[in-house]
Length: 378
Ligand SMILES: *Cc1c(COP(=O)(O)O)cnc(C)c1O
Image (cartoon, rainbow, N blue to C red):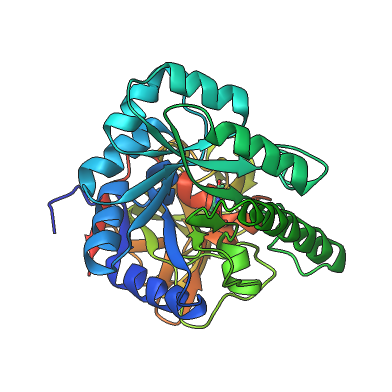
């Protein structure tokens, strides 16, 4: 383990990552391979260690990222990987895409043409179809029109189409309307694929499963499952269970810098939003919103100290926060505290924190800032 300042740090368990991947593999049909989604620095876990572990220890061959910088980084960590850019790359970078043997998501004929104009070499593509997400991709009322544009794209010199894909808007919901909506999204892309097959175009890839679909509506027709949040052990949606054995990969820790007993009437932190009603013991902890621990958790969040939940009192500051340790008499300066993770019998998950301030676990883990060193444990 590398040396690091024991102030605020994130422990990333590669053993849990491996276990999560094993569980996800067991959900998928033998025809479906995992495409690990490692955008945004592997959802805040650190792309280098995560990609190397997935490629070298878990046998993952396919990776998805959001942009060219992430793709080039992934290429350096894993020379043999298949890397798909899900998002936009300015066409003037088309040459870099082909140079690094990256696959670009293509959203229209016009975009494909511009890519082709900017590279002397063929460029590998998967064509994105907007079947209901309303974000990017070919948008048509009928699969036939969509297939026609794909055929046109395939005729562009230097454009090498290897697959089609789409993204579900609400696969993480068991509301009947949403299920029908997702059924229709899936049917649309399958119809596009069938039309292409009827024209003797057999693309190697068609993919539409994200984490939620992988868990709740796994399909052997998707050649890849683009699994993001689930490999990191969080819920696509807090209200739905995830498969047994899947556990969060990241824990967030800090230390107590000082413990004090304060008399009734003492104010705590900026704005004096908290005033002690009686004598109490409070501990100051070495983490704040600049570390990605949201200020929206002021007077709301809880942290674990010696296995007990301690409530945040007053506002979360940039680098520090204060908690009530009246019920933890042994708490003292230097103790390690858990903001996300397990301590004793209790656990605080990123999903739980997210629900306190109205966001999703994804945002919590992606938001752990650069200042927080990631420590990898096996
Ligand atoms: C981020 C993303 C994913 C992964 O989503 P999860 O919910 O984290 O599994 C899959 N596909 C696309 C297009 C994405 O943008």
